[in-house]
Length: 433
Ligand SMILES: *[C@@H]1O[C@H](CO)[C@@H](O)[C@H](O)[C@H]1NC(C)=O
Ligand SMILES: [Zn+2]
Image (tube, rainbow, N blue to C red; front, side, top):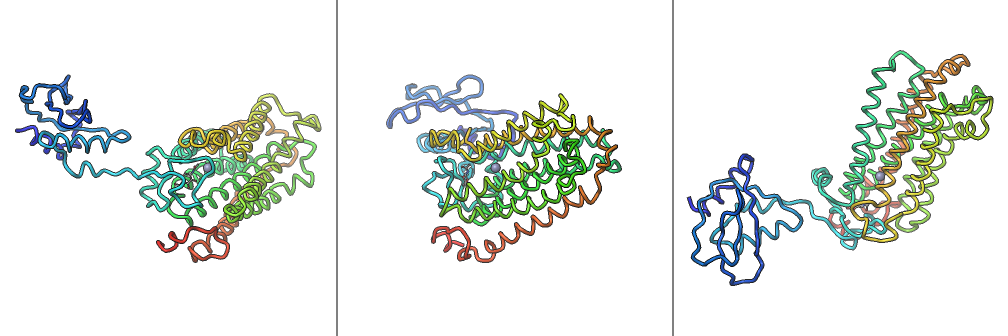
């Protein structure tokens, strides 16, 4: 079998990994007219010898499948090699047509998709759902964003399962606030991961994806309020007016937070700063409210209920990371210092994800510590969680928040191009739809 024949046969054996043959191209592009031969290099590699004798020993028949790993620019190199070595080597045409989704620079995509100080690595603004999923395995500006919330989802789910095996979530109502908290801790990274994955299907999908992302975050603030209200509340506030209305106010906060953060997206193009301030405020408010019992306990040590040592350090780490998270969300640091440097790794949103997750981890530890150490005292003082006050509130706020997201999404879905409040997209895009 000739060399050409054997390489042509490659396509049939691509799936077979038993014999792998890595072609090593050397000297291709050294200049036209250079004569050379293909020879066997070490073991199972093919080498191009540009200075080899014109009548060199003929290459022994190679009857192996070829397996090629294409690196960046590899396709072009391979194509070039096939052009130059036309008589000797030919690869099946379909092998060259493997396509990775293409990436774009900031000026190639519509304004709605642009991110400040991120100059490259943008995916196509009208990717298919499949492309979106595939793109999470390709290095682009969202890859790290996707994975920094996908992996933590599994971590928190695992923690929930372990807790489920040691606590009785079904019948012990004292654990329900923790259950709600843990469920929402799993939901928010997962929603965010999906939002980052599917946000490049269209301008509308981008807005709707982030509506869900904001909704999940604001539900998470409710989860914090429920667990703080039952386990972290200082002794002098137990059974106070604030304690009795804590969860209800937090429910109101989630409605406010979701509406404001979704609304802020409509201001983004015209008033980027106002939009960012509104969104930040919308998230800071519920989280500050949730943390009031904790501040109270730390600062005032009221009723002798200072934070016990094991929970105390976790609470403090959580607060530190919460501050850092807020800073990263607002500051666009570090990419604003060197636009283009952090397109793939290390931009503020990735750090924001990591910091949020680490903060959530410490918060979870603190809540669990408080919950176990204060159980007898809390139960003795009549702070028994009810089904309605925990799972019921969760379901109600889920429904209400989905309703808000629906209200904001409706104009985008019905009038993709001429909606009254919709952020303006370029005209060419409207024609395409
Ligand atoms: C990444 O690019 C997409 C467009 O493909 C854009 O929607 C998104 O905002 C960008 N994200 C970051 C963090 O730059
Ligand atoms: Zn995110």
